[in-house]
Image 1 (cartoon, rainbow, N blue to C red):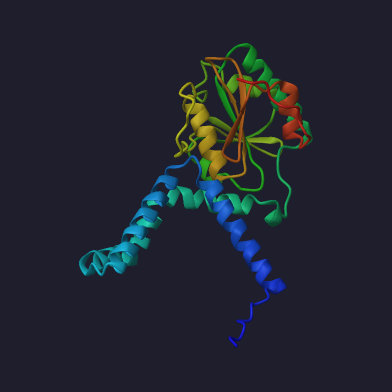
Image 2: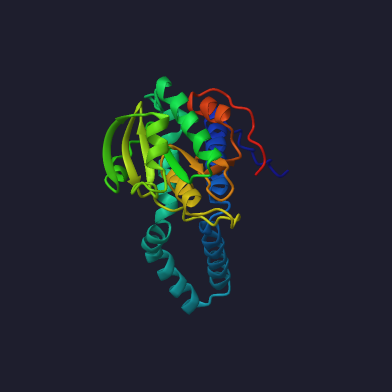
Length: 257
């Protein structure tokens, strides 16, 4: 009589580990979708399959070469994936689990920003306004002109006037103060499907990918208001929706672009 092989019974720790690993893999794949890193991951998977086949068929030279590639390739991966790694670490820090301090504009500044955005939209004046939250933006303040001025619709409209020397850059808002103007933001490294998006929108996406800032963009071509946060762009916002988002309230959906 052949003895039966005991089937291991998973405990709660095993189930917990499986759920954690599954979530991490899902989060990584979701993060990589739509980025150039996903194509590189597929390339590495192809190399892994080739290495396995070479090992099974005892192709020693190919096995040795691919072994060297995998051994020292980790340094190349760190260089190639640098933008994606920065984004991933930034998003990890933006998670609700790790948030301790509140952030965002002061209530008095919300109405002024919303009014300024509406004025700029009506006149089709290009603008980009960054609202700092938990992640400090001091490094970007240094790329423009430092300021210490209370947020007001009149001042924002003046800064983005075509005759202003600071109108091409971004304005940085911290609490109820404008701390920088004419600032340069990093462009997104991810492919943008909509070719109608200009440099301002790409810069807004780039900063929102690396920080938890809210970035408002007024397009001078379409006279529409967009908001970049978490690497995504919401377009066709109204002043009421902007005020609701900045105040942390649930805003009604944006109209389609």
